[in-house]
Length: 109
Image 1 (tube, rainbow, N blue to C red):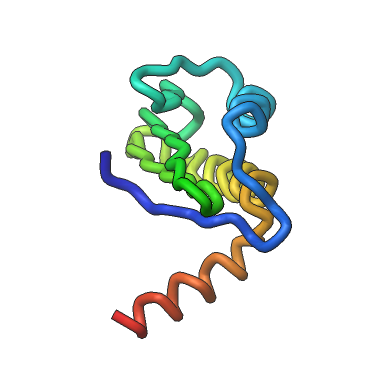
Image 2: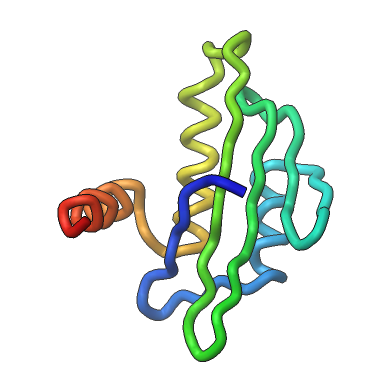
């Protein structure tokens, strides 16, 4: 599965139960296949895939992959806001903090 990987902020822990609760409250119904949470047809997203990557002796990480529906471009901003709010709840990082972290990582590589 492709997608972006998100780490938790200090003091936050990504737990499966918390992720399931937040997916349900932000996006509604989902299905689970091989440890990947799938949300079909949510606003401007045709498909969202969310996976908790577990590490031994480390904090878990979250992988998110989205597939956009260009026919619903008018809902894109609201869809992105919902996804940002979900990620902030689960990881503890605001969109601005995640952007800074991504830029820093890109500079290092």
